Image (cartoon, rainbow, N blue to C red; front, side):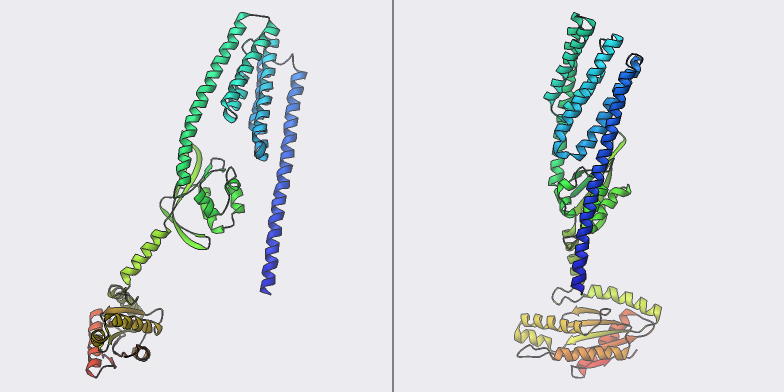
Length: 476
């Protein structure tokens, strides 16, 4: 029944995922069609106004209308289609350059024909800059040359031949051409710095993710992609809330929460489940500013899992006896103090049991220290099998062990000691066997560590004097 339900749940999950993706694609196409209709309406409106009021518009109105058409093309049409058709990005940029260039030519003709303006070159800057930034420097120089040539031809055709038009055209080509070269060299240098920084980010041992001020992911190295279990094409240039929806490792969404919250995090510890394994990270987040303006946020995760494991091992070594894997005397003393305080507060009994192996020196002398170590390990394991998780076991030193039994009265402590004694006797060491002597001290009030240890120790010596393999109880 459970398998059938699980199968149906998996089928429903796949159906829902497919439905959501198809719905998103349909909505995206509807959105594109709507924006295309808006673009057509805007261009038709500009053409209508130009034709209807060609002779009545002032110089400023003509200029503003052409400028509006160019800005609309650059800021609305270009990003809309490029985002939708990433594979044809270059062709759409070339289309935008052509449209803005034609609008600039239109303004050149209008200003020269209507207002005898021989230096109407302002709008040519748009196609020149777009082609330089988004295509190549050569295309920027080509557009500059075409703009200079058309400007000269328009002036000659409408105003008549003048030598100054030729000189002006050459000056425009040289000035704008130098502007393109200088700008592209500066961009090339900046790209080189960015590429070096990006290489460092990609090769970094840290996990790095960044987004721009609009919330689009513009930085994500391979290690972060591995944590998200995603490919770069599904992350880069996507809004972070879109990426959140496709992340299968829901624990990794903590990274996006940090991106969203807007606060800076410094040296905060973050625990993530990666490939079914708990991993630990140091989290830092930064707000990136450019000339004082917010330009994005970045999250950096440094993997400290190995360090945490080493710290855990060091902590364990600091409180654990290396041979028997029981707690050591130092840890036992700390817990003893804590339990005396707790027992005093709640008026609960507390029992201390000291255990000493009988004739252990003979085992070492007769069978060797390796056999003695084996005995200590098996006795430690036997003790652990007879105590609760709330009890504390420790190797007190040599062949002596200690038990701390919270909320255990004298009868309960004796019962534990008897079970341990029987289990130790049942251990099989081949040619020899081992027994142990026990000293017990139970206190119900006026807890004092040192007197409890001394009285339990005296009870242990009494068990030894009584012939060993005995359990003796100290009387408070």
